[in-house]
Image (tube, rainbow, N blue to C red):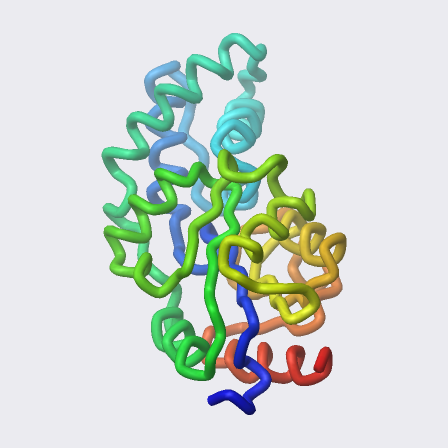
Length: 230
């Protein structure tokens, strides 16, 4: 294990749309709020790209798409309602993407340390990961409230890597959207994006070092990038 490219590396993962398909529960919660406000629900495919910048962004974009732009005061009230409802339904339909668990175990077996770097709140992230029996695979979970700024700010990724005991450049960021790409590039990490996540800009257009279509491809992709960085 010690002579593999993954030995001593940190692999940082986005959560929503990368590790776990959370859109059904997130959009379901959004639609419940819209219904309470007598607004029409949004189709899953319409609202899914709004995921990735935190709940406030999802609510703001969702209500705007439903024809009801929000003031800051209204957004605050809806945010608290959203979090309470989402917490109660956090893993009703959310599931890890196919091949996720096997890929994580392979990375760990090859000597990598894994960390979650997500714009979701930390306690919600841990609650979700616990429900899906994923938490034990990660050295730390660094959510939006556990860093000085959220992705795409590089400090979010830097705090996550530090929490996992890693050092740059032996770091790979695995994500699905512009927030992940921005954080990785600014922090000097290699970047793997998944093609199946939630993004307003297609992942291929975000210029990842490697784009993968299935988690089966992830261990080799990380080994290739880490081997290149020495």
